[in-house]
Length: 381
Image 1 (cartoon, one colour):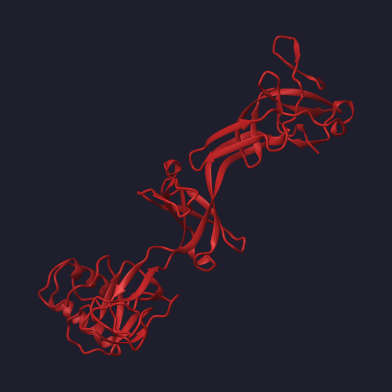
Image 2 (image 1 turned 120 degrees about the horizontal axis):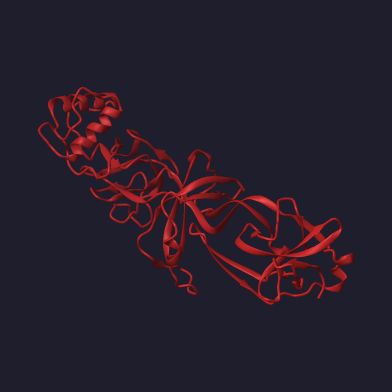
């Protein structure tokens, strides 16, 4: 047995048996967000004789550093857009004369599609437009319409659930701004509701439309009330991925992440949604139930890349602050089952028994043995 000895605390010294942990002897499984680590060690191996330095010195050294140590895990994700829904035709139907193109973003009061040359415009609301609103009507759909009119600058009424003459007057001003007949009434032949700005994914299916064939509808096809005109998503860029159901419990809305885009850009974000239902994946070799996770970016405007691009999501776990750490391959496995490091000082080496903490980022937290920042410890060359 080579090397020095560690102080037992009773004045005696006992040999530690300097046996360096070889590559791939340490397996760490980190549960993202929960800071749970499982460590497995195989039998350590003594370094080959031709790697040993003179006077028991290691072939190379690395410093003991002090700082924060964070365990993390990485998940394969997909870049896309939030949610998906259909925009169905309203009104009496007719010939489709224009569609918002795929990839375009439609905002409040902008055109979604045209039937017989008449535009249907987007308004923000959480329920479909299902009736023509007129003076005397009441309901939450009246409030949604009035909220949109006020946001567009057509005011002069109280925003409530009653469609009054003042509401009708504001509708007439809105109609005039778009060159429409000023009726003071408005229905699904003129507006469609969605929760916010939307991104057009594709034209609706031709089934249910008189297109003379399958596929997607296009200008020139006839549409009927309720037939799908557009498939849309939210305009916000998001990342989606799946985790095994047992691990999902450690993820919470608001958990901080970093996303690496296809071009190598790393952007901060957070978990914005955690699914409630576990489903089996598409891989026939892995039927583990998984939960859907959605990540939103702190600054969506910085996100580049095409839909369905693969990305990497780094989930931060537990953080140990202001701790001493060394590279994992600096560890020595001791005969009694403990661990140590080989401290090199003043041209000599001595083995120091240590207690282990968190494993993360290729390093391990250590304590004990009078260790301090800046000390040199032996590592393989």
